[in-house]
Length: 522
Image (tube, rainbow, N blue to C red; front, side, top):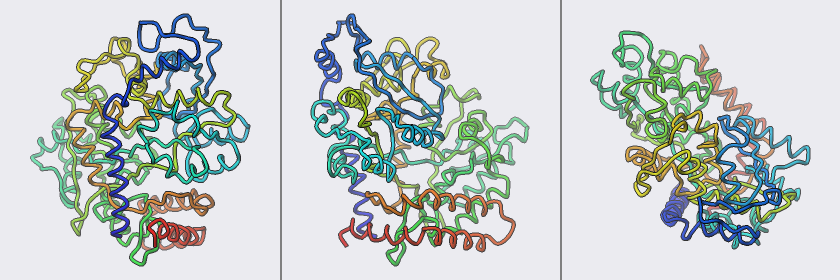
């Protein structure tokens, strides 16, 4: 376990160092890089707006298709994409699909032999594409057309098991935000309560938020915790029992296995069931969509949400909230019976990232688009939109900005491409981090600090490829079965874990344990 913790610390520290080195404007001039690209294609920039190209013959631009997922509905030919085309001298086709449909869309395009030029994939699926010769090796282009990518990921790109004979996978280098238990402090104040610090006080606060009229409107129209049917709603609850939810863990005998085999799993589920059964959690948790769950927070019905704090305390503040004044929040660290606390760990991903199709007619142009989006200036365009049209800086150094005119409306802003592509090739020093308010910055750091240790095997496992989706589904079904059960949850747990073992779980444990030992030099 000491070795495991050491490796985790090294990975997180490496990412933090990358973040620090990426704080400048990409160690150079992004605008100059775009100008160079324009020169090479015979199209000089004018002295006007960023990336304007004088008298372009747009029919000669390389055509690049990109598959991106999200939960918005941007116009197909919006202002952001138009500007990105100008800045990268390309003709872009953005295939935008709902997040839940990404895997299906990707599989359909592979089956039809019509892969997009740039798309996201990972794990065994990405390796299969590479082995089948479907993915371009971009190693020879990185020095010229991948400077922003390399300034973000550095040598992480070469640690990917998919990049041992070339560079096929472009990882982002980012460590995803951890989650926070965001709790309304204005409701705490109304009820004379303190921020909860353990499981008992958390229960008491959720009970008061549900039954004691925390918004003082005289109506029975609130509840404690916003939640859906996923485990993530209860990340800090599992953490209070020392469980890194949805992660691989190492048992005392050295076996690497699913987090659901943690010795405290049933204790955590018993506590969650009590919250559910006592009516302190979203009543529609089994069927509610993610956005509708957020909506319960925005409309003043829910008093707490486990989510990245950048949402409740920064991105949604104040426009998303219907109450005036807007609600206030802070972040609870919830200790369990043994004083443990934490949230799911996230690692710098080296087995998931962006791929460029081998059928791409202009790999250099595709990499140039990806690289520009990986710059601070490119991310600024994808996050905010077109400067002085959709937004303007008030004080760029301190991250102060404002949206302009009709783009102050979030729906209009996103329909025209603002924010909806911001996760594509996001640099470490991205706009979201640069412009967070101080509370959100502190909350984001708290979430990183709270990440629990877990097993992080960096190579693909055949058993995950063969059984992974089915094994994950068994755990999800078990979760719902335990939550909704009237009888003995231990019997339900044993039944599902027996099924997990027999349907590939034991084979996975054997391969994962051997891989983890090998990774640790044992």
